[in-house]
Image (cartoon, rainbow over the protein chains, first blue to last red):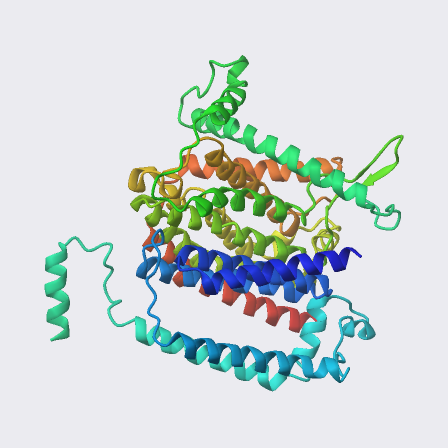
Length: 194
Length: 337
């Protein structure tokens, strides 16, 4: 009973928040509803008994959306509406609608076939004498999904190194401790580029 | 606390516990401002508040009246909804985080026979939940700064973002080594692991120091109070706030200080186990009080750092140290087993 009520509250709130994310023209509203929606999705994980995944959802997306915020801060004035460019709105509407339809069909197909079965349900590790969500996730990750897990780790490492190389060109000196004026700095940077 | 003879936790008990946490921690948070001013004053050879009531004790009431009766100003060009929501996020997440930590000893209310547990919601991934919730609390300063259409606010929220992205890695990695030793994410398991009297800080001194440093950054205390450093950016993210909205930020900040104190006590300093002749509940209150005092002590003794120094410290010093600590802990655990 409680779970039904909680599920519908979380589901409706998440949908509304993500709608605001897409519809709103204000950067601040979009980002905030995105963050709030991500937090509320972790509520659904908790309802399903997947505490560990719920908390991971919370921690990862709070940090990820925080990084998005910092970009929004650099590129937009948060208190003003963004002027969006609408090219062909009919085409956008059609494509978006089609995509949504495809997704609905994709995800509802197994429901119609009544074929949804958890291959590795919660409580998997209890057979081995240890209980807990983190143990369940660890057991599956390091047996069945070991290769995808390691490949994902390698991909993240590659992305990190690429990020450092892209961003780290002018990091030899600290701009904060530099006592030169802005014009002198500009000259210095131009000299180095030449 | 006997794990075998605990009565059943009822919904009424949890609700009473939640109200108790809210009331007591909010009151302590208010009282914390008085203690902070008094301790800082003694360390700087001043008197501190002393005119309202005996020893200035009623200063708290005077401050409360001031906060409640002050005009609630919302700037004309601010984003009003976000501006109003931001302080609530800080205060609410601070109290939600407290739901999963052991705050007071458990007891049974006589006559109506309701058992009030020590932890309001004893989930088996307590530590991660508390850290995640405290991280979500940083949205308060971030949104407040961005919504108020004020340059100081924007700088404050930019500093929030870099501070969050810097210390969050250190918090997670530093607490990972004790988690590996205990093999659980539950506060109760951490407490039981140290039941023989050997505190985890003995095995993990590096992790303890790293966690303390990251904890100072997490609660925006000096030396990492970049978000609102008044000598540089007026008040940072709280520049445009007044009245009780401003007060909510501070209730949240003091509640977070208590949470960090609880985590440090339970994970590293022996938890609520009995010690010599002192009962467990006295020990945990003493440890939390000491860590609260320690934060004030540091504030009185240290200057604050620049944002670039914080990033340098977190990414180039603390994070490698934490990773090395985790690797060494792993090797030692493997060899011992």
